[in-house]
Image 1 (cartoon, helix red, strand yellow):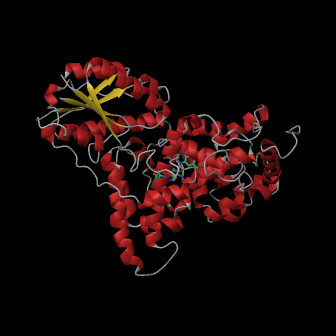
Image 2 (spheres, helix red, strand yellow):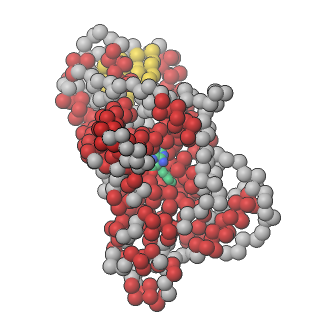
Image 3 (tube, protein in one colour):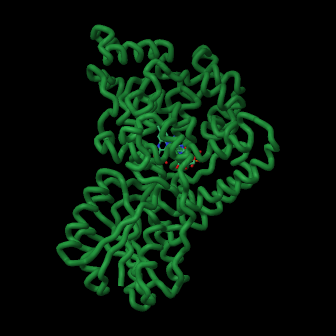
Length: 491
Ligand SMILES: Cc1cc2nc3c(=O)[nH]c(=O)nc-3n(C[C@H](O)[C@H](O)[C@H](O)COP(=O)(O)OP(=O)(O)OC[C@H]3O[C@@H](n4cnc5c(N)ncnc54)[C@H](O)[C@@H]3O)c2cc1C
């Protein structure tokens, strides 16, 4: 018998480790699928992610049951639970897919030692990415710090085909498993999320992928930055939890690329169908880029990637904390920022362009440390992923790999006007502004207080002046770079 330990790969199809566990034995019904609720991991959880994970586990269990098998669920330290389960099922090996964050790697090292002590073999596979960290490197063998070079190699490297799901006869029979019920969210110590978290499981993920590939993938390059167009795949939570395999997603892009080439018909549109499918693939590569950044530098989870000569003097006084609260509540008086922050609360998701805008606003208009924003996203995003979230935040804060230069500061009004010209996205999430014309929405900061009261009495005035804060941000970064003398910050 062999145990297969599910972690961030909550699916049976296109699961490299599960396929390997099945392939390694000729015996019938020899693979026992297992999931362990680990309190050390749960300590980092938040309601939207736990909700999605539990729903995905229910779907995974249903998939196994359809195959005449079942998912074994346990709670505790995997370094104790897995040797015990191996003993119970008389398993001679445990197989799992690698996870690349610092926390996961420490846990896995302990599990390996415990299994070694128990005389149980273990095997791992790389499954969550096409090209595992450490395999796409500079000519000197170092991990890439600049995405473009990483992407060129990632794009040109051959990709594996999806792996088949195991047949029922390969899996332990349902009646050999205790079939304990899954815990409730309350059993795990979490409240139900206030947000409406998207449906979990492989079927739901496949539906999202199929819907995206029907049409949006061919327009992705031109439309992806416009939040009201809903032109992106919404697969981030599925990719985070592994309810769909990366090879399956890539295979869909191969079909789309063949279609796109036929559509482009020799044309050379910069943002046409071929460029669009390619652009979508490059987003998949960003995910793997950040995975390898975190793998090579686990400390970036809490520290700046980029060294500045001096500490960045982020604001931290009482006024700054009030601004932080207004940002989290979507009450900054900057409509595109507030719409994003409210989308996050309602859907446990935020559009990528808007994530960039709200992150820039927190760090460069409010001069607040990116770690505040990261923590808030961690609590509220269903797709929160240490590598991507950290990468996104440090990009916006100009502290990361291949980050936005410190002097590039988004103007939140111009961003709103450019990417939500009809204020459709804004009015969806800010009902107070629904009857205000797009012109007035996009010039909210310039209207008189009287005019603002007249148009939308319940929507706040801007909490800061963008032009003034932009200058302060530039000075703050120049001081951190050692280019300007320290000066008393004037709040
Ligand atoms: C401040 C900030 C925080 C972020 N936090 C997260 C996070 O916690 N988890 C997360 O998955 N993404 C994060 N992103 C990246 C990006 O915003 C989301 O992946 C994307 O919005 C998800 O929507 P989608 O699935 O429709 O994306 P699509 O545009 O359809 O992209 C397809 C997939 O590519 C990956 N991807 C896309 N953009 C990026 C990117 N910039 N970096 C890394 N991977 C990317 C995701 O897996 C995504 O599902 C963050 C970005 C910023 C600026």
